[in-house]
Image 1 (spheres, rainbow, N blue to C red):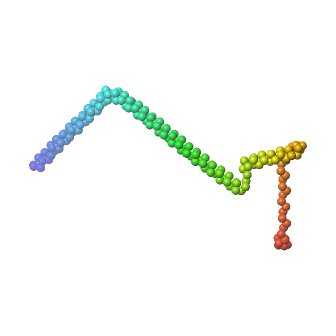
Image 2 (tube, rainbow, N blue to C red):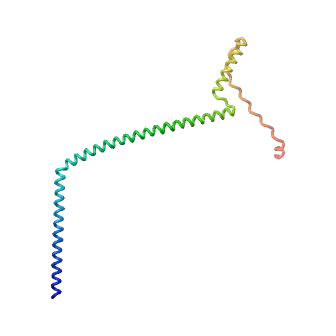
Length: 167
């Protein structure tokens, strides 16, 4: 009999614990429901104010970000201008160095520059006028002729040794 009583007592304790747990869960659910209703009511009353506040904050952030973007754009343009002018200066310097070296090389080879040719043409013209003046100015001016073409170079005679091998 003792075993029946202990089993019964254990069932009673278990059902009491289950009841307490069920009550706790029910109360917790009711509190959650009431908190949700309270949040909804507060959102209804303060929602418009909160919305207006968020709009104002958005405008402020948009203004700040626009100013920052403009400043960044100015900085980028300034840096690009500096870089471009620096590159242009270096390109001009490189071009000048190249022209100087080519000019020196041509002078070493004895090639005349356009300035040298102009000076020589002026001297030839002055000499022609001087000759005409000495001749009494009677000689008519002739049209300039194109320089005569050179005759093709003659081929060298074949060597005797080459003839002997051919035979």
